[in-house]
Image 1 (cartoon, helix red, strand yellow):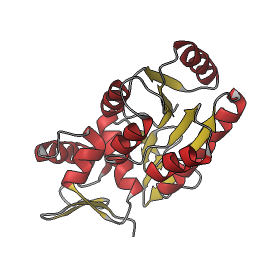
Image 2 (tube, helix red, strand yellow):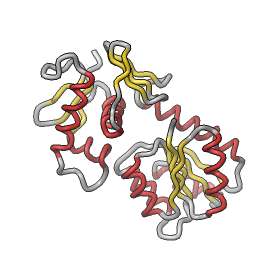
Image 3 (tube, helix red, strand yellow):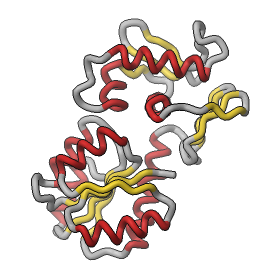
Image 4 (tube, helix red, strand yellow):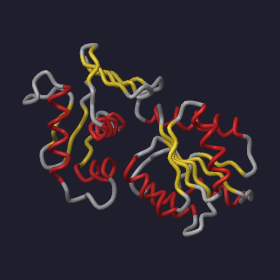
Length: 227
């Protein structure tokens, strides 16, 4: 079940969107300001953000830039600004899609599903499945299996694993992992990554001391091996 964060200052619209999205099977979070929206993202790491550009404390473009500094989370903009230059500005800043108010909830749901599918593809899993050796990650159902047996991960462990899946085969630095998993302000907490990587290895590797999947690149970071 994916989680959607709505950053919108119109309470009635939030109420309608929350009801519709929950009926469609999503978990929903909401924030009425840009700063609280960013802090909610840092704490909860939702799977998609619905963002209004006309917020009371800051321009929505600033929120997009703040999110893009740390994450590739899909962003669907909803705004009363319907001019082409506004759409281009939002998309250039990093938004994935743009809907002009008023819009139909069915159309918004369709855009959300497309954005989530694209996000899964960026993780190297067109059908929401990532598999290497005896490890399988179901990104749609948020389940992890080793040798066909489900392995239960904590939210942080799962987030860490999905970041490595997104960059499978590539080295991800410790600082990048700290930014993407824990958020701003944690770049120097290198022990966080070591501790949680150790926990992941004990759950996913046959021999945690000689990992097959979660490889350490000394002095640099970690890599999810795909060969």
